[in-house]
Image (tube, rainbow, N blue to C red; front, side, top):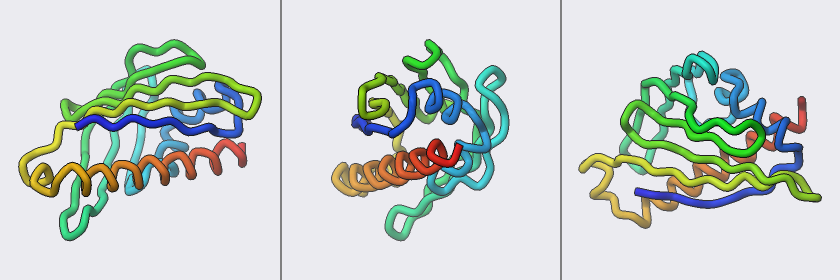
Length: 139
């Protein structure tokens, strides 16, 4: 499944770039993150658990960062489960962060339907960007 969107964060592209490539910041921004370690150069190791209705989804694996163009764009690839592309564009009011996420969803979750999974993905994105705004505001 593919999810796209964008948010404006009240910070410079440089500030956002450094925040999303910092394991400690990612651990506080990603909803359900139990542990995030590593670096952009070596890859991140993450443990994330979230519930969708009565089911829990979990991700334990390595995230590699590719297609890095500082302060402009990057791609996070997650152990064969999907990837997230982010593009940063500075504006007068902050930085627009556009994202394009592709996730491989197994049969168990695929049966829930696109609308349920879409609402879940939107909720995750909203929480992530709200947490990111808080993190860069405190920096």
